[in-house]
Structure formats: structure tokens, C-alpha cells
Amino acid sequence: MIISIIAAISKNYVIGKEGKIPWDIPGEKKRFKELTTGKAVIIGRKSFEEIGRPLPNRYNVVVSRTKKFFGQNCTTVNSLSEALELLRKRNEKEVFIAGGRRLYEEALPYAKYIYLTVIDRIYEGDVYFPIFNSDEFIKIYEERIDGPIPYTYYTFERKDKLLNNEKEWENKEQKIRNNEKE
Ligand SMILES: NC(=O)c1ccc[n+]([C@@H]2O[C@H](COP(=O)([O-])OP(=O)(O)OC[C@H]3O[C@@H](n4cnc5c(N)ncnc54)[C@H](OP(=O)(O)O)[C@@H]3O)[C@@H](O)[C@H]2O)c1
Image (cartoon, rainbow, N blue to C red):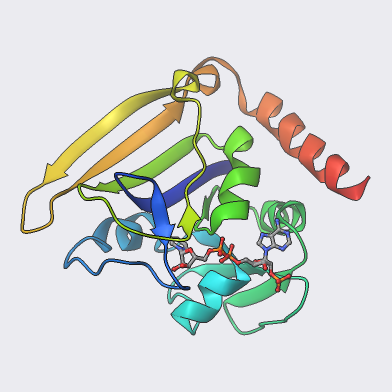
């Protein structure tokens, strides 16, 4: 199962402010919709509450230890590892980590792809995307969208994942599951 991270960040790595995304740029969410439709998303409780409903046409896995959200295309689990285990059982081919901060941070070592939209502005915020080691990734896609607030779509692919087979990555997933159980 491929683990992908998807996020929109400002030039200074902000992803959120006071529980919201601090920009509203027409068209900017298009890529999120295109990539995740028909797939599974793993999302933190605060981000899920902010959206206010399960994302349609996607299987939503909310991570929370305090609240439960269930529905036809929505379930809640206690941890990232539980989410991954559940989605593997559902035979999902690719799962998108849709934030926030802790899920991004926890999933980064296991992510094959990072789909990043970088808004070409500095924003104030209180939640940041984790700094990741760009040496571990290779940029395989870049598309700049011009407009009043320009932004760029990037795709990064993990370098060693280009070389190694899926089995190795399943073992890594197993490792995070075990770590969490310890
Ligand atoms: N720009 C973007 O692409 C983007 C994407 C997503 C979110 N955001 C923004 O980011 C902000 C929210 O992010 P956030 O980091 O503050 O919160 P969050 O990750 O959405 O939610 C945090 C909550 O999720 C649960 N949780 C997350 N990771 C967990 C884990 N590994 N194990 C167990 N529970 C876990 C916990 O819920 P309980 O407290 O219920 O246990 C935790 O309090 C908002 O401003 C939102 O708009 C931006």
C-alpha cells in the first residue's frame, strides 16, 4: 500500500491558523480533489471537524482518541498505525495523509510521495508542515499556477523507494505499528 502525504503550505511552511487554512485561493484545492477522489484519506480530528463532514467519494479515516465519527464512508481509529492496518485490510492501493501536523510528521518516514502545493506568499500561522529532508526525495513534478496569489504544485518521490520493492515498505509499516504498541 502506497502512503502519500498531501498538503498545501505557505513559503514559510504554515498549514493552519486558528483551526483554519489561512488562505482561500480559487482552484488551489483542485489537485487535492483530483488525487484523493476514490482513494482513502487519513485525517486528524481537528482538521476533520474543521471540514465538518466526511470528504465525499473518499474513504475517510479520522484519527482521534477523544471522539468518534462513523458513517458510510467514515470511521475513527486511535492511531496512524491502526488507520494503516485498517486500510491495508480493505486492500487500498494508495492512502493519503491529509494532515494535520502530527500525522504528517509521523507518516513522513513511510511516505512514498509528497504532494505539496506551495503558496507563493508568507502567511502567519500556528501549525506548520514538518521540515523534511529533501535529500531523501526527488522532485518528479512541478507546475506553477499564476494568478493574484501564485502557487506551485510539486510531487516528490522517495529516492530509496525508487530502488526498493513494496515488501520492504510493508516491513517499515509493520515497524511503526509495533512501535506504537510498545
Ligand atoms: N494546509 C493544509 O494542507 C492543511 C491540511 C490539514 C490541516 N490543516 C490545518 O491544520 C490545522 C489542524 O492541524 P493540527 O495539527 O492542529 O490538528 P489535526 O492533526 O487535524 O488534529 C489533531 C488531533 O488529531 C488526533 N491525532 C492526530 N494525530 C494523531 C495520532 N498520531 N495519534 C492519535 N491521535 C492523533 C488527536 O485527536 P484527539 O485530541 O481527539 O485525540 C489530535 O488532538 C488547522 O488549522 C487546519 O486547517 C491544513
